[in-house]
Length: 535
Image (cartoon, rainbow, N blue to C red; front, side, top):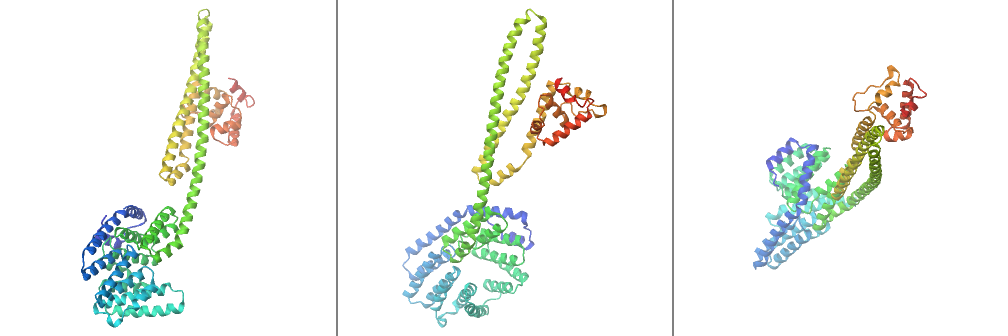
């Protein structure tokens, strides 16, 4: 994925990427993290071509130049290899007695050691160089390498006296370098931005940084470094979202350029950790650790050693809690499934008994029908009752069958989310009460239709026993309200308020209150429920 420099500069200057677009950027970053191996294979292919070319030449100067190219390719990819090719160039320069080439290789080695956090070793190699032997073409590199070395020592030393000494040397070499640079060169702009940053002149520093971006290309080390330095400016301005935006761009560029000596993704991991996004923090810090290990960077290992245990511990604690919740959910589902299976078994047994009784009743009725018309009439009435029972049992059998199907769908969904590690989605699903409310509504509708099918005159019978002003009106002829459902359960012989409360999912006190209110509205308060049940 190649991002146009013009588009990128426009985005950065206009500040058009806000929090809701950071998710898209993070998806691009995670996609590039998955593609890291592709970029690394392209890098390895270039390196193999250069190594093959080096083996084929016997010319010392040509081998020196190829080794220098290999060093540049390895400089931010693999420290040991970069150092190895610089050491080879030092040997070549020694063997052909070329002081200029020797000093050039030593200066590059010094800068490599600085960038990897080996400041003392860098000073040692720089001290081998005679200032008077440096040609004009290498003076900028000489001052810059010393400046970077003493800057690192100033920042990392624990001895205050040494820090003061290193700081003076840093300023001295920086001033020497500044006087030699072209005003608009890359190095001059970089130093100027740093000066503004050190003085907390952040607007001016951002302006210089934008100017530097105009000459940098996504997928290069320069682009990654400039974006990283831009993130520092936004951090000091307190603009957290823009800081994250710059770190993401820097990290993407590092991956595309196969830069293993990177800092952006490690800092991004700590920001995610502070914001509570433990999954992303854990993924990014591990990615950063693998890069640092591959490159052999002392600076990165020190940073990761301080942050990785915190992120890993928090991530593992979160996973442990999520697994525990999922275990409880699975236990609940298993218990519910057992109850449903047992209920289905009881219903099937009841259907079998009803079927057997119906067959016996039918045979008896057929015999009696020949001799007694009254018995035939009774048979027809019993058959009608039997149909009602079959309808009632069939309705609830279908309901339990649907519950089993829904339970199986829920079980497959849980297993699917567990296998894809979509724990957050599963937790949100299990926290919702929508499915319970839906199923309760289905239960009430089925109960109302079945009960009214058995007792079509139930509502009018109830109203006959109530005072005229207290009679109950149905908004829907096929639906019962709460008062009528309580009376319907009483009619079916369920007289315990606690059992009624469990079936209708109300508190016992609520059921008591409803029953008391209905009795108060009855013509005969004392015998209202007995007469209702007796009918």
